[in-house]
Length: 97
Image (cartoon, rainbow, N blue to C red; front, side, top):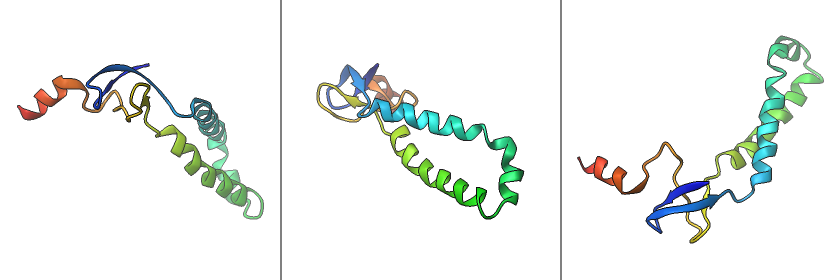
């Protein structure tokens, strides 16, 4: 993917540090979405389901670590801003106006 690198001041090829872990994190959240309709049943079973649900939520923190990790510039290794953040020289001009 191409992103703007603030250090190189040009558009460069960027990649994530661990792209396979990002896919696993996506699978982690998609698997949890399947159980949303069953939350009343999960809430009623205090001995098995709630501890298992707590383990799932505990693992969500590790999954978010990989999901929120910014892409790195392949030239200099700097973090590149996400598409919605300020990018490139035109963003600097818009901020000063």
